[in-house]
Length: 262
Length: 329
Image (cartoon, rainbow over the protein chains, first blue to last red):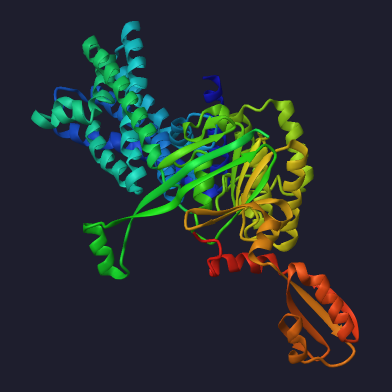
């Protein structure tokens, strides 16, 4: 286990070093990283000019949802997107060879070691919005609410990581699957609003099929003291199941790796 | 000698889809894919002992690279048993991967935008090489490959030869016992090729490492390998000593003479097949076992100034194996 943390540190350090090789790119990435979250809040503010609540949530409460949306968007940009690109690249060019040759878990090396370190700012800003929302509400979460919340975050991460991995693994057969992640993104956009905004089957899909509600609405509800423990248990159960499935699928798919080019 | 690599009845088939040329061809292939089975490796068996250096010869697409990739656990074999260092390759257990390496002249593992040392550091962590050992191995590799001046430069700024040397070093930091080398000298100039060759020979001597190598440059194989495999369209058609192969395929030598008076083809014909004749100089093709007898006869018949007896060029011989299908089953 220590070996793997150590490896992550080494890989992320080299990612940062690579970013610093190209200075113009460094600064523009930094700018993009700040722009998006600010824009997200602005868009929500426009809604509230016209109406007092959104799906039963006030502006300050929705701020928590937007904050979480940016936290997870940041995590996706920071870790998931670069890794999906890395896996597809590896498979398309046959350089997965070097990953498979290493005495370490191949899923770990192929799907966690790439990162765009500058997107860490999205995450910081996202937490800023959450703090701002709570402050404006004058609400201090209880210890147990806070603990549940800090349990929901890694759980949410495991859920999207596993879902992305399941999609990415299809690259062993279809090679170019980067577009799938765009598809996921278009679903993820729905997570900017509390799940109660949606009705009927859309709500069902966003909760159980593409479980975006587990990333934004539910953790926000935790901090607002509105979430029952049943949901938390359900989320963890879902995360464990998805992680297991994605790992098995990856192991199975490697057999079909064709090691492009000599 | 216990065998370190043992392969029995290995086959690897691929399904590939066919595409006719042109836009319509692509359109057709988009909607209806027609698949074809390619038998990249077809029922191959062999054993390699510890410390052996074996060369893999064969035309493009014969199955050399596929075999190396199956041996190193990258590709899942269609059928057959493979044991390397006592492990089944495709299980890719960490203990197995620690003992082998695969170097591909066509692929890079080094991080493109950073100096090679950064990539070495990553490998050190993955292989969990203790600091002290790492420093010692790195020093040895730096000396043998003369890496000192290039280690601090970004990989993208290195020449092909410099990069290849760094790739070799990166692949050997964990001091593997079995080396699979796929075209390790491709694209290098003659001096650099010779350097890499010397390095591999030295590495084999020092550490008793087993090496299985493919190369398009005969010189690599001649310099390094006593034993060779010849593979053609997925079949192993020859496994044995290089010298024996040369004798079998080309049981002739060239006898070149220089005389004091002009020569003509007709008077030479009774000594052997005339390869070339140019007034004072001629080359005859003579069966191996008769070369000395023929040379003696030539001395008696002509005012000889000089005689040389040469083996035909190995490159030429190997070329003949494939063009004339000499070993085909």
